[in-house]
Image 1: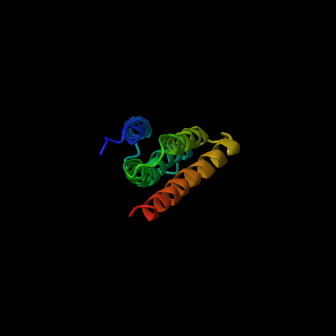
Image 2: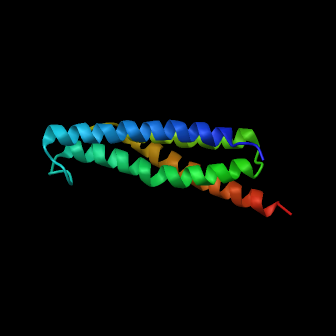
Length: 132
């Protein structure tokens, strides 16, 4: 079995993004003096949701992507799905970077996340059904 490089690089990028978003929440909490919740601070709420939404979606995607890659799926599909998901997460992070940001970016983030996870799950199921 070959090490799943695409999944590894994707995990490294998403992990770095997660730490960046976590630090952003921490700095905002310190500045606002709110240690739990959002204290009715909309800017803090956006930062919290941006961080949490990545945490809620990335782990499942990475597990599916890793299984897909080690199942022998074609590299172009694995790379394509990883690109869709990472791009979607970047759109979503931008959209939730503050009030008044693009609804288009948020929509692209949501649709891309759904497409990435669903596409990876479907292709993995197909790959598994083709195994002896």
